Image (cartoon, rainbow, N blue to C red; front, side, top):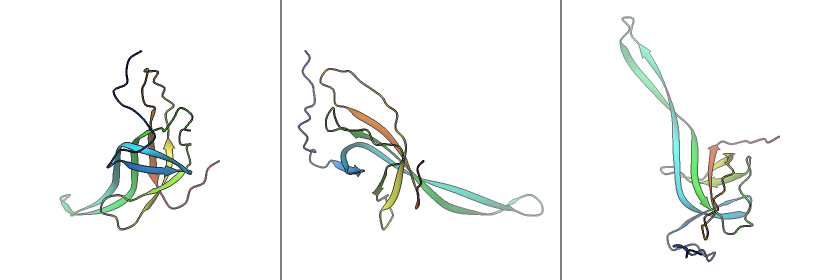
Length: 126
């Protein structure tokens, strides 16, 4: 059996970020928070650009999360959590929207899941 090049002992490494979703804590291997912007442009009577108004919309949150063990549950779609995007003064609430069920049977491999979430203020799940 191959020796794993990483050892998971359940303790986050120094400088590691964690996120808690529905009372389960995950180690964040990689994370991207993207603000979504929209714009409206005005034109002159001659059809030339006159001015443009930019509006910041919701955030998209994407991350690769490390599962602590083989029995750690994947985050469920609709689960909510908070995180603070750069340049924001307070935490933003996110809801999990996409959780592909990927399996990797590498001997000694560490289980990870890629999660996508969207920001919002009120969420309803069916």
